[in-house]
Image 1 (cartoon, rainbow, N blue to C red):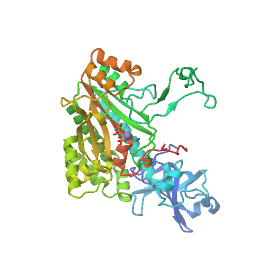
Image 2: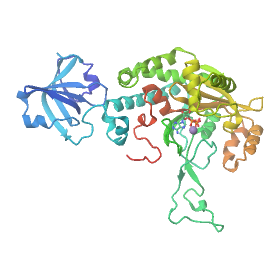
Image 3: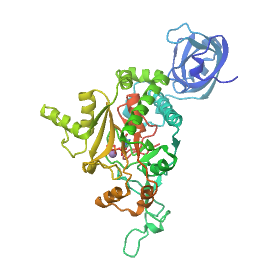
Image 4: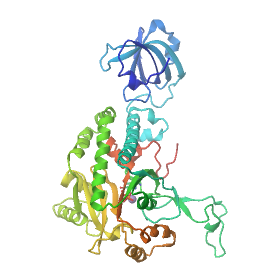
Length: 463
Ligand code: ATP
Ligand code: MN
């Protein structure tokens, strides 16, 4: 008999023979009958299996405990109990794998901290099942969104020889014998003898290569893992995270903002339309404002505001007695507390902050006429702070190389990037959306470690 998934069974009409396979969430009952809640990961909901004691050996039934994996053949019937329309009247049960009392997920209500210690098992909980299904749905929706707009999915390299962005500390990639590092005559590390014949690291962003794609294919996006040796333990930073980076020829900063806003709204709407069971579960268990917050984002236009105006609001707030841990003032980078003040307290909706001081932003951003600011845009979200960072890119070869010199950057590794400005340079823009930051927003999870299956953070690379 063909196995049917629980998601499908729960939507099926009663009155047929079925086969279900999955993991036992709970078993309860009395000496006449047992009720098993079976889950196979296809939905947050379990299917109830009813086992008449007369049909099954008592010793056999004792082996079916929380965590065990079983297959059940039986009749799909209308359920007498509340909470489900159908259930399976078991005829035959096969045990694939037992789970004795040492199984760590015996009872519900484990702390998120404890579940992180058993990240190899936590996908079997309701919470992580829900989060991981939403994660999948969002990944699918991202490809859908860009594909429908004619963007090309560009695969940018994970191993790179340039830290052009200065976006963060990089992880080095080497095959050198660390116990016997080759040295040049003057005692420096001889990267020339390393695998790539030069110093290499894991990428912090696919943007620079993305720009190569955009100035050829028009509109591209990347969607892949990104690595930053962030040595700060925050609930919003991972050492390995996934980023979506669209890059578009002929888009100015306004087009870029429009795309970012449309993109996030599309994803939130997709989640509400396709993952409502899971979102409702998370709403009820963790954060009963989650659904309201998601709907709220769809309703409103995002506020668009210059950095300078943002600073004025924050300075006024300080005068009015709001306490910030970090200083506020024109020229300083905004901390998460400042971003969240603007979004949650002042405007009460998402904010796109533009035109940041050039000294706190990357070298490739398009310079404004004022000589002080660049055409950057950060999208700030409730509960998260920065969810997107982007900009219009500087397309002038002269201005770009001048900025690189000002910053004392090493241009040797950048020759290929500068060639985009040398020949057929085009106005273009792009941004990076942190996939896990998006998922924090959509799931309501408050720690980024809980929206990725196997988080990588300082001192943590188990599993
Ligand atoms: P932050 O100030 O929060 O560290 P950033 O300015 O370093 O962010 P960008 O370099 O602009 O971020 O990267 C683009 C996006 O990638 C950010 O808006 C954020 O959503 C995400 N991001 C950046 N660093 C991390 C990280 N360590 N873990 C998870 N997501 C990240
Ligand atoms: Mn950062």
